[in-house]
Image 1 (cartoon, rainbow, N blue to C red):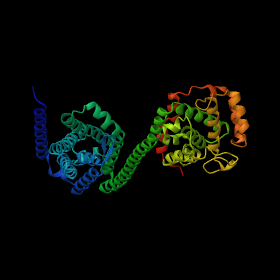
Image 2: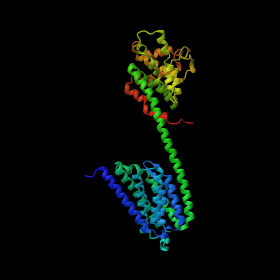
Image 3: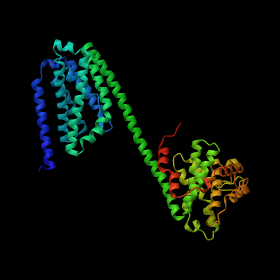
Image 4: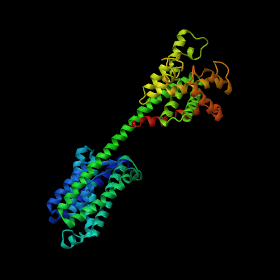
Length: 462
């Protein structure tokens, strides 16, 4: 049984034989008239080399104007000039890209074989274009259709010779290569084939100046296409980096909340409940989507500053003055953490001021009334209500009605009176908010890490 190494070497030997046979046959079929007019040979050779040098990678395939030039050489010149242009492109590409010896061989075989086959096909279907009868036939639409057919056959043969090489050396299946490297660029190939047909008919009817003008237009269009593709590629790379960075930053916050939840089991449930209350109240108040998102996120993360607390402060038996100083610092600590994320400044501000009181006796800045951000005032109400109705270490839980009465009792001093009434009215309309299940799964749904990463990675609107 043949080993993989022996199979590969036999394949290389077969490629070498095909290359030698193709070049030999092209030399034998070469005629002086095939190289006329010489200006056309030089123009198509230049277009082949420039087009190959400016090839564009789309998906896993390559889109290039070089194939248009080679098809024109096959159909307007003959076998030998077409093979010469193809081999010249292979030599230039292999040298520029510094490919391996096996890739050199495959490039030479590919760019010799498909121009050879295409030129023979065109001559068989359209006749000899260098004769008077052939020139007259080449002026009709049938010649354009033949050029289009030659283009499709040779682009398929081009792909097949490369795909077989990849299959032998890398083991990638032909089906996978077809899906990844041929089908994505097929629409572009069809358009290029149509363009080659039009250019060929334009040359046979109107002469070389029209063809040269068409080539200049083609190269300009190709340059613009390349610039667009490169721009899209850079945009994709930038988006990928932005998503990665956003994922890292939000991942840190998520990790801190997870770690805090392990130390205090009630943290996640409280954060989820406050977030849902706050989002519902923001919607009830008619806030825009962006402001709703700020309020919802601030409610979800408002206690993240507690991560810095020791277990003695987190689960106290008795609190000292130093402990109270730590507790009063958690809005600043949380805001500092969240504020490091791009675009999360308003969320950080909402967290920073969620322990302010409307009478000015709160902390950390002793703000009064509307000086306190709306998001902070909403989070304060929702957090206070949830704490009262789900109390643990702070005492027995209050009923919904008792908690509403307590909210009214501190409205105007601790909490915003108008927002308190809107919050209570909202709960009375939809009591299901107060009895919803706020487990870990609910928290994950509220945090929605993937969606947040995507939003955070988007460029800021101007």
